[in-house]
Image 1 (cartoon, one colour):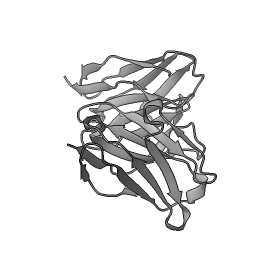
Image 2 (spheres, chains in turn brown, red; image 1 turned 135 degrees about the vertical axis):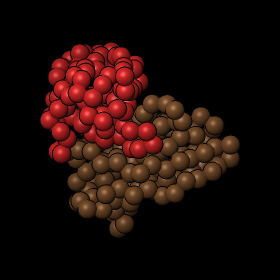
Image 3 (cartoon, chains in turn green, orange; image 1 turned 90 degrees about the vertical axis):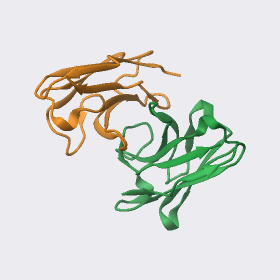
Image 4 (tube, chains in turn purple, blue; image 1 turned 30 degrees about the vertical axis):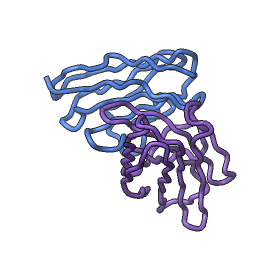
Length: 118
Length: 106
């Protein structure tokens, strides 16, 4: 199960941190990805992290502005996004990699977190 | 970046119909493709990965085929819960999603 932190309203230029609390599986065996969806739009990949070795990979438009981290003690994954603009208004999802390694499909999704930037 | 072309962008169908959706990446991705269904206001659900592997619990009316630069999702007999938006996703190099195909009731 993946449970995400609650909605946030931010100002232009702010930073935001979204948490994804995992349960029901061995945390370090499965990578976690972040995907966002702007209102009425399609899906956009933000990045992913391997909780075992903390390797990360980010979509090109997010490099330098997003950081993914893990907390093994709470089996959580966190996404921090900086220098927010109105284009960052979206629902942000965390999702588990289906076979564990990065470069795969996503089988378990969080409920989504709405980030509104105004 | 690998671009994903998905067609059609929308289609109308009836319960029981057989439909197919095509996904064409801009370069060879071998078999590194997944398909998702997304109902309005819900998170996406994984249907297939590795182009043709049915995810656990997904009904057998869903099937996937293809490799390289040409992939197809087929639903053999549409059910009421299948009226939704479908996305393909490549994971060969980073991740890119197709723009989606909306399936609605004729």
